[in-house]
Each structure stands twice: as structure tokens, then as C-alpha cells.
Length: 178
Ligand SMILES: Nc1ncnc2c1ncn2[C@@H]1O[C@H](COP(=O)(O)OP(=O)(O)OP(=O)(O)O)[C@@H](O)[C@H]1O
Ligand SMILES: Nc1nc2c(c(=O)[nH]1)N=C(CO)CN2
Image 1 (cartoon, rainbow, N blue to C red):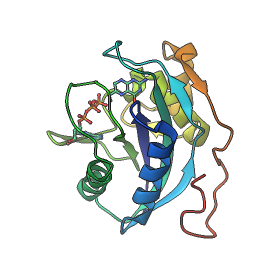
Image 2 (tube, rainbow, N blue to C red):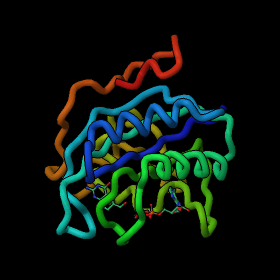
Image 3 (cartoon, helix red, strand yellow):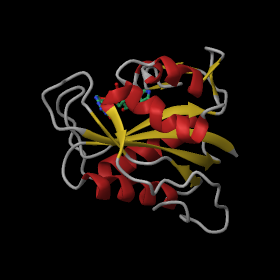
Image 4 (cartoon, rainbow, N blue to C red):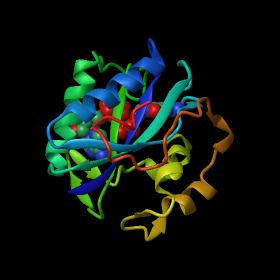
């Protein structure tokens, strides 16, 4: 089993429902179990500024899949939620980013892990810090908490829910998805 962290983002449609649906569908995939989630944060768009605010949250999963298989499962969930790819960094119903996978460093055209832009994104680091503060981001040697302290635009990332569960809940499948 490998521990991986996934970032979720949405800024179209029923944003809270999109997050919940994506987590439920991820948890239903063979070989993936969602074990912990952060709170939901409302965040100002980064990159393309003229678009609606996002909701972002992060999840910890345990998986028996390879990185490529996990990414494929994430892309299936995105597709099933009818994400339409249009403009780079533009609006989307759901975006799933594979942030970290154990201590692996992968540099392939179709998969880069750790996610190459995660250390510069407050909308990733601040939710992730809730559930992975002491996790080291390879190959930087620094933890999520350390990166989060220095990331710009921290005030563009505000929690909107207190329903994140930061306690591990191993008792039943899907038990941590609020
Ligand atoms: N760590 C990763 N997580 C998710 N997708 C990745 C990762 N590394 C490479 N990719 C590739 O990137 C593609 C997804 O690109 P996408 O359109 O979602 O980028 P984006 O979300 O607009 O931008 P960003 O990558 O900056 O968040 C996937 O098809 C996948 O092959
Ligand atoms: N606040 C915020 N901005 C973004 C996001 C996102 O999830 N949240 N995703 C992007 C493309 O991955 C581009 N910009």
C-alpha cells in the first residue's frame, strides 16, 4: 500500500457537490481508499484571473495501484464528472492533481510527481498542510508545512467548512467523506 495525496479543485456548477462526488467516486475505484480529507477552501483563481472562485481541498488515499494506474483512475473520475477540457488553467467542474505518492519522484511526459507547481500554490499547500504538515516533498527535503509558511497569496485561501476529518477512520469504506 502506498500513501498518496490528491488535490481537488472546482469552479463550475455545484462546487461542493462536485468535490463530494469526486471523492466518493475515487473511493469506489478498485485499489483506492480515501482515508483523510482537509476542509474545503474558497480560493481566488491563479493563472487565468477572469474566472469564478474555486473550491479546493486535499485528500489522502491509500492505494495498491501504480502511479500511472492511479492517474488513470483520477482521469476516469474527472471524465465521469463531465469535465470538459477547454482553456489551460480555465474553469472546470473538477480537477484532480496527483500531488505526492510516497517518496517517489516521477518525471515523465504524462506524469510528474510531486506535482510540479504544488510548492508555489497556496490553494494546494494550505489545505494539504491540514492533513500532511510533516510530509516531506521530495526531492526538496522540506515539509508541506515549511513550504506553506512561505507561499504567497495565503490570504486568497479561506476555509468555508469545518467538516474536514483529520482523524484517520479505518472503520468503513468511505467513512471519511463528509
Ligand atoms: N501530478 C499530476 N497530476 C495530474 N495530472 C498530471 C500530473 N502530471 C502530469 N499530469 C498530466 O497533466 C494532464 C492534466 O492536465 P490539466 O489540464 O488537468 O492541467 P491543469 O490542471 O489545467 O494545470 P495544472 O497541472 O497546472 O494544475 C493529465 O492528463 C496528466 O497526464
Ligand atoms: N484557486 C485556484 N486556481 C487555479 C486552480 C485551482 O484549483 N484553484 N487550478 C488551476 C489549474 O489547475 C488554475 N488555477
